Length: 243
Image (cartoon, rainbow, N blue to C red; front, side, top):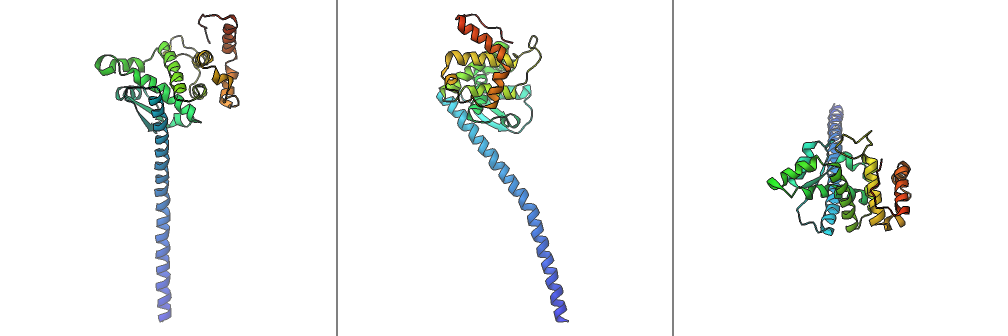
C-alpha cells in the first residue's frame, strides 16, 4: 500500500515538474526573441548614429542633427515635415532592408542631412523652409543629390553607393511633367555626370564594377550615358536633357 502511494506521489510530482518545464519553454523563447530583436535594433541604431555623425563631422555641419531608426512601413508627408522641424533624420525599416553596405547607408543619410540642414533657415525657425523642402522642387532635388555626393566623399564614402541605393529604392514613374520629383533615371544620370566631372577617381578605380545593382544601373542608363559620352567628346558646356 505504501509502495502504491509512493508511486502515485512520484507520478504527480513528475507531471507537475514536466508541466512547469513546458511553461518555461513556452515563455523563454518569446522573451529571448524580444531580447534578440532589441539587440538587433540597438545595433542598427548604433550603426546609423556612427555613420551619420561621421558625415556631420567630416562636413563641418554646425547645425544639430540627430538620427533615428523607425520600424514604420511608410514615410508620409507629415513624417517628413516632422523630421525637418525636429531636425532629425529617420531611417525606416523598409528602406534599411535595401541597404547593403556602409556607402549605401551613408548615401541614405547624406541625402536626408542635406534636407534637414536646409530646414534651419527662414521664417518661423525654419518651418516655412521645412514645408518647401517637404514639397521639394525638381531643381532642389538635384541640388540635394549633388550635395549628398559631396558629403559622402568628404567623409570617405564611395559616392557610387548613392547610385546603387537610389537604383534599388526609387521606382521609375512614367513621366515627371506634372510631378514634384524628377524621373529616377534623370536623377541617376545627373549624379553619374556629377561624379564623372568632380570625382572621376571613383569611376577609374571602380569598386562597384562587379556589383549587380551598379551593373543594372549601367544596363538601364545606356542612352543617358551615351549623351554624356558625346558631351565629353565635344567638350560641350550645355546641360544634357536626360530621359
